[in-house]
Image (cartoon, rainbow, N blue to C red; front, top):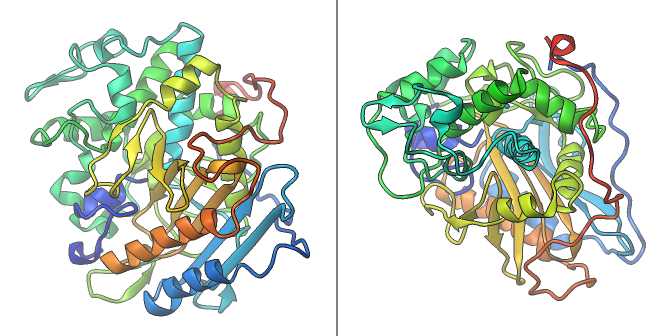
Length: 425
C-alpha cells in the first residue's frame, strides 16, 4: 500500500501506522447470518443516507459500503440497512450488511471490556503500574513500565510508540502472510522514538493489555474474550482467525492500492500483527449486539462503565476533530446534537468497520471493503456515519442527549461462560 495513499483510521493523516493502528478462536464455523433488516411503512426510503453511501462508491470509488441501523424498542423503523457498491469485484455481487469482515480496532473495545471486568473482580488495578503485572518488560530506551499504568494503556496516554510506525510497515503487503508474536511487536515498539503529545494511538498499548490479561487469568486474552464476551452474547459470526489468512463464511472481499498503484485484493491476510488490538472477524449485526450490550450495562458494573467513558481529547490528526478517547471507547460529536460512543477499525487489506450507539438508543454499524484513499473520501465516510445517526433520528430522547440509552435487551450482567483455554487452542 503506497504511503501516499494511506489515510487515517477515520480521519488520521499520520501515514501507514495511522491506518494499521486502527485495527483482532480457533476458526469458528461459518454461521448463516439471519436477516437483520426490516422496514416499516412510516420509515421512508432514507434517501440522504443512500446518497451519502453512493458518494463513497461513485465519487470516491470505494468498492462497497453498507450500513446497518437499529433503533431502540418502540421506534417505528426497527432495523434497516442501506448499501452501495460491490462486495466482490470479480463476480459483481452487490454489497450487503450481513457479510463478515475484519473488524480492525473495534477489537480494542472487546479487550478493554475484559480488562475492566477483571478490575471489577479486583484482579487488575487500573492505576497500578504495568510493571506489577509484567515486571521488567518495559525498561529500555527511556520507557519504564514502573511509570505507566494500566489505565494509560487503555486510554493511549502511556507515551509508548506504535510498532506500526516502524519503517517495515510502510509497505505492509510485503509481510501480509507473516506470523507475529505480541512480545516481538512490543520489543520493536520500544526501539522507536518517543511520540509527541500526551495522547498517541498505539496498538502497542493493547498488546500489553492482552499480556496482562494472560498474566492474571492464566489464559490467553483471546480465550478470555471468547469466554466472557463472544460466547455469552451469542456472537456466532465473530471469531479469532489466528494464522488463517482466509475469512470463513459469507464475507465481502477487501481491496487496497498496491505499490504499483493498482487495486489489489487484500482479503487474504495474516492479522496476527493486530492481535487483541485488531484481529477479530465479525459482522455489523454482531458488532452492534456487542456495543449495545456494553453501553446498555450488560457487560460491566456501573463504576467500570463510567471509567470507560471518562475521556481525554484525541489527536485530531490520528482520529478526527472533536473525537475523545476513553478506555477502549471513542466519543464523537454529532451534527444533530449529542455524541456517538463506539469504536472504528481499519485493516491494511481494505476492510473498515465502525460500530457505535447514539442518542435515543440508535445503533449504527458501517462496513467498507476498501479504505478511503483521499481526505475528501475520509470526510465522506464520516458524513455517512453522521447521516446514519441524524437522518430521521429517534424521538425517545432529546436530540442533544449525550448519553446512550439502555438497549431493549435484558440488563442482567453477563457472566463468563464457554470453553476453557485448552478448548480454544
